[in-house]
Length: 293
Image (cartoon, rainbow, N blue to C red):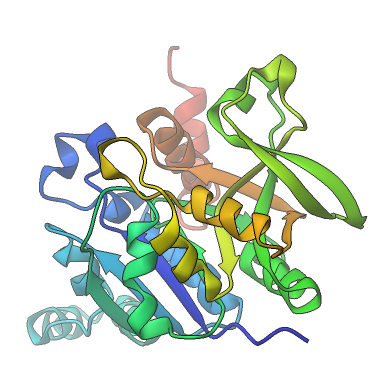
């Protein structure tokens, strides 16, 4: 049986250039989806999957992430007490207690492999999960829990699989060439980055969340940097595959993918969650119906 996953890493050091000027001083991971920042949805998924140790790799201008998950200030606590806002006080206290957070600053070349390599001193010689901090998936059971079940049976590398329903959207993702394993679990033969939709090997994007063995650190150190010296996670994963470590994907069940990494999809995510909000969802729906569009 594979070793139990006890740690998750969230890369959160990017510049968020697609959201400038809003992200000039505010982390893109802290963009609100109604009343919670994007990264809180990611953290809740990790915790609901049974992991309590969360490593967040940050960069400049990311202090707001640490502040959000920190104990609330005495001034804020007193203000809420004075206003008899007990439920809000309980909610912000829960945020600080939700997990054990470890923060490290990203160092090294550009590329999404660098923040993962930065986590080696903390993670050590054990498997771990990686989830991006600027997108999330709502699923039952949680996406990461579904992945962990596959990892415990097959080991190796496990990548979440998202069914892309709109054919034209296939060119936006890494699309997997798959071999059936069991049920909704597949072996990954190859990943084609942003293919022509007519030539895509499937409609399954391997994207968003990973369970990685500790061998990934050695692979990241050995891969040849891309242009401008970037280190990319997919290159290291492909190296592990060449060396005999199996790659699997689980096509997520009962799942909705929310891409908050670009403005249009971010707005769609906010609207959808606003419609589902217990307090004002119905009023918001009526407002949208009455818009002259």
